[in-house]
Image (tube, rainbow, N blue to C red; front, side, top):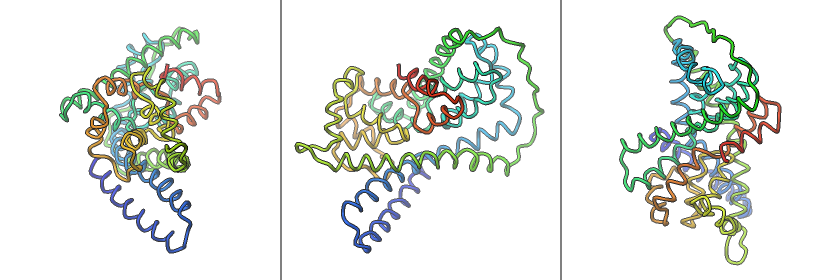
Length: 351
């Protein structure tokens, strides 16, 4: 996904220049130019450039397995494992969807046979790191290893996904006890025959049904977040921006978690979209503006700003286990129809 992300970043850089020139031609005041260009447009461009390519790769591949008839066999083979945790094998499919986007994973929980199993799958789906958290995991993994090594980073990323899966199993077991789940009925599943996938159906379902749908929802949340971020960065109090003041206030809580206030602010501003965590952290640590393109040297910049192995390890753990993004929370509220379950789904991984 790095190559198309870079192409998109260059395109948005060009579009930002044209947009800025248009506002200057229209004699827009500087504050409006900053709000629209440096705030909303730049944040939206970052989210699209980083989020779109991995999703456009992952979901067609996932839909290919689904259309070929392979995924029902995964559910059948995993049922015994999930049965011990108080769920059923179909939860394996919702977890796999969560690797692409937790919002799609939550929506996919409609396949669960009972309401109790659906609630278990929904409230634990965010423990599987989505592609929006991969930049953070890879950057902190590089800092933790002290060097960039593709094989070690792949193993570290796999370990992070497995850690999230272990958390899912543990919490699923606890929730099944709290919900007093009934003894399971025999797992009956009609296995469709293997068949030749239909490219048109795969592209339609994966690109329009999943990728662009999730991207549009994330964009609607990211643009207002960029506006707030620009205001907090622009307004100065005591020689420091409001964002820096807020990061200093949260230093105590951040250090308690093995991080610092700037990193904690990055995670908080990742609520609209997880892709925003790294650029906000770099912006606070380097005291520069929000980047317009994915940072190729994010790990080197983090290390230069004093982020050591212990901090990187704590960030890696916190990136796997923390609240879902706003788009996922909206999906949880819609699927459960309950604010209590939405808040619980945010609190469980964070706790």
